[in-house]
Image (cartoon, rainbow, N blue to C red; front, side, top):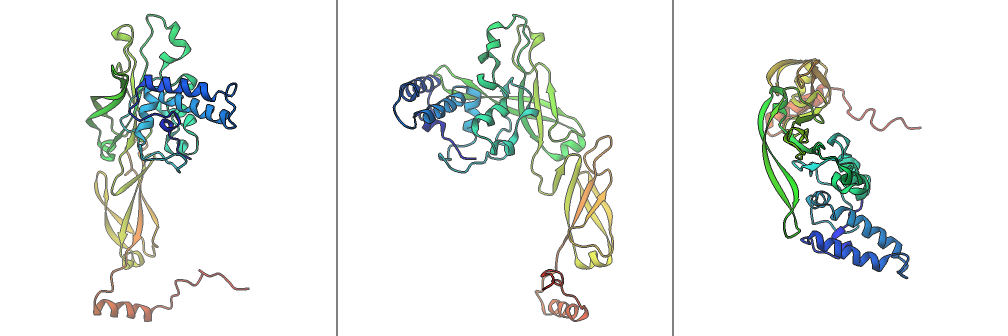
Length: 330
């Protein structure tokens, strides 16, 4: 999608206060209102102003927008950075499971992106901005909070106790949006998968009494691993093998998240073949599997002996690697 610089639309610097945002919007909205302005693009400009104001007037949406970086320019092709929302805590508006994620956000405009992310509709993510805020009973339960956190794959195999830091937008006395940090100790259960949620009771917004505080829901994701890739409960790894191991078969040692195991490479295996080790994926009932993808690695021809060996191989085989590559000619 195309990037939209909401600060530029509202003729503001990025350090503008919330009052600055409101004043600039009101001034420009009067100027470009279709019932008043004679400019040909007045209606389009008025819509742009409304979209920009919808995001920047809300501290959470504004902080999320700012997290995506300030180096983008209007009209530039834009993709939200991976895991831009890690550790970003927000209030209400539905669970993290309902968020569109990076891929969905890239296919929609910012307005839809923020609606999917916070689920807040026209009044933004925080319930206090909506119509219901005026009629909340005194014993109303506090709002739930949501955040995305990344953990190591090893923690899903073994379980762990971890300290996590979350940042939540707040407005300071001068009207500027800042990020307030808090650290929590969290128990990571063995077998948790990406996309699942951990509930921390009472860690959301305060209620009218301590007993009815909201909860905090942590959506779990995995940090990128240098060796393993994850798909649900299943895990995969690329294993380098020599040509003779693939051709003749071999017993090889395969690293897993939980230690090493011995595996048989069947004779006649080709590069890219997937071999399954049952139950060696993420623990569950049933557990996931580990898929070993064979990666054929050729020895270098970096000596006379090695070159002679390759030449012997060339003369020993009647083999054309491109026999079926070009197809039949008519």
